[in-house]
Length: 355
Image 1 (tube, rainbow, N blue to C red):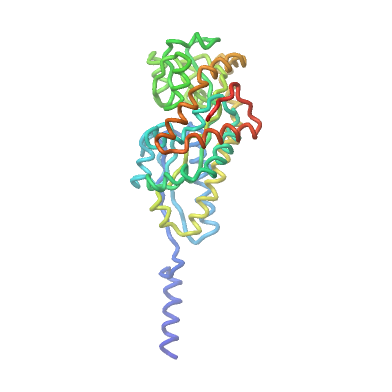
Image 2 (cartoon, rainbow, N blue to C red):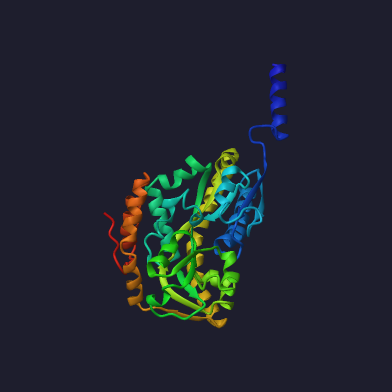
């Protein structure tokens, strides 16, 4: 009896001292993006995801989370974030799948269907619908890249900013215009000269004439002060694209206490939704800001959208076939996206056909 009492007392002492199974942990997580906090999604990483996870873990568990933050390329560059998460250089990364064309060719599927919805909220809901029904889209991160997809990230609507005025698609022929990844095809089919670039390079490149315009959402034009060197911003309505993601190193996630895992997933889900709603709230404000800064902001007539979309009419089928040949569910994903967008109320200027 005395021996059992002593053993029980020892177990109680160890638990109180923090050596039991419920031991409180001080958790340090490195979170980063190659983009600066001027980007809406990075701003939400910094000002929503990080403080909310920190606060909820402190309030609801015995653990403590401390984030080490590195934005604007201080830890990883824009094209190296997937690899940074994969290797464990960082624990959580936010990045554009546009820089991973060889690793994640299917994840740019909304780009393959230009002139989609201009609502970021609808875009991210549409993407989530597809991801939830095509397991490959999420599982590939775990199976090939040692990470877990925490959240999808929507941009606000893509348009075309330029250093020159234009009114018709034909006026863009031969012009050097920038984009990132697959949206360069939008330019190519219109007869422009596509140039691969990234936002941190945009100001200097347009200032020095490396190229004369950018496929870009208004937040990029505002936050990177591109209106100082390119005074024309034209609403072409290419669509709000969900092709960024927030991922976490799979091994690091697995080591976290279950209750901390649950909070990270909870906040990530809210973060995902906010990338839609915040972008939609900011879009008209950003156009007003551009106008106030002396930028000419106008919208092209629907006839221009139809002309541009017609030039791209065969491209979605080409992409679907190429993806299918790689063993990826390209046709399934593109057909599902087209049909679900229509169920949500979107009307395509030209209805792409995927067989």
